Image (cartoon, helix red, strand yellow):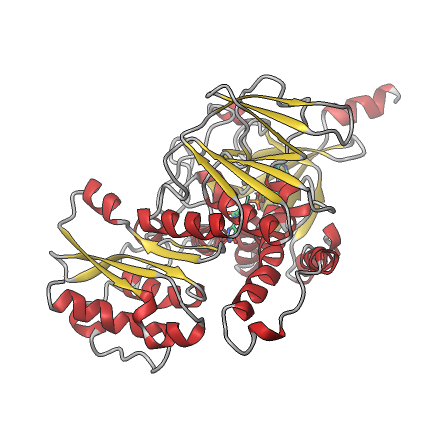
Length: 491
Ligand SMILES: Cc1cc2nc3c(=O)[nH]c(=O)nc-3n(C[C@H](O)[C@H](O)[C@H](O)COP(=O)(O)OP(=O)(O)OC[C@H]3O[C@@H](n4cnc5c(N)ncnc54)[C@H](O)[C@@H]3O)c2cc1C
């Protein structure tokens, strides 16, 4: 490089845009769509694939891996259909279908979508470089300096958090990325962690034939949900042949050979587990360690705290937003996209000088659902679908609540859905407001039931009105009737 081009690399000229979005995951794409639609020139910076974790290493491939096993298991649970099931899953076909849902790890179609929405794409790693400035290092080493007239939205998401264990790096453990994109079914799979990712991946790989051992530090699976959810999933996984060991911690990991050899997982009870792969499903960390946060007075590697409009209030000037996983409010795609719609609307309104009244009829400028009505489905077998507060969380928040439980197997629609249907439902009722503070359903096919509960919780519908929302006969939704009767009769 000669002297002039060297200087240009170090001091690239400023390129002004109204809005800079850092990270083109589902959340960044949605922020950009809104700001571009508001007539603001918008550029989005992406270091890997447009579409983010969700499209290639999380929601889409994981749900594709799970769906075939769930369909087969549903068929096996219905007399007349189960006799027609004469073989196990076709592993290669399941993996091929998964590859299709991950778009074969190519982002062409999402790039075309950005183009059609009038959003400019800059490929490379973006780092904040003082207020309103983003320095981008392209894959070919070239540098650009983007400057935002209105806003920078950080939508850089999260990555798997690995514990600091001896031997871990050298053992090449799976994270959620390898667990969702693996090309072969491991004969023996150890899974460390009993949260959502651990439970889903145990279900998926067990259905594909892996011998699965889960190593869980606490006393059960899905610790953030109602306790019966983890119990039912644990029971079903054990029946399916998985081993679940609770109350154990991993103290070290060792890969026996350079490539392809087995991996030994050392446990705090002195035992050693040997597997072909070990998945660490031990939580998430923010993608903020190499983001230039220090240039604006924030701490690298921290989650970015925001207000209800996703504005980072610790940074003066009202130009920095953090949306999606990176703000740690609710680490699911649908909630991040909801925040993106709100942040995009706020950025657009502020840019055009539109006042943001607190009482705006749609509440379109405040992500209020994040604290009270986050829906989540765990696509394990049985499925777990929950929204709002668990009984324990409601009590922690000082609410006066009553819990109503219902066996789902006694609902006609559920009994028809699968022979010997096992499941349970719970409403957490806010006694002072007469509304549903939380709901959890566990059983086959309950995922599609969840939105009814989300409407009840987010809409703060009075139980007295829910009584008039009549569920169809004979559907699993009739559990609503049983729950409301249970509440009325004081059960
Ligand atoms: C195994 C698994 C399964 C999941 N399943 C579901 C599910 O079924 N449903 C659901 O709702 N949620 C699910 N989630 C959660 C979901 O994946 C996340 O909530 C979602 O991806 C968050 O979107 P995001 O846009 O905030 O971040 P991401 O999807 O992580 O996207 C961030 C983007 O920013 C880019 N980036 C980061 N830093 C930089 C930088 N400095 N410069 C340029 N680009 C950068 C990244 O390359 C990435 O493309 C799952 C998560 C996991 C791990």
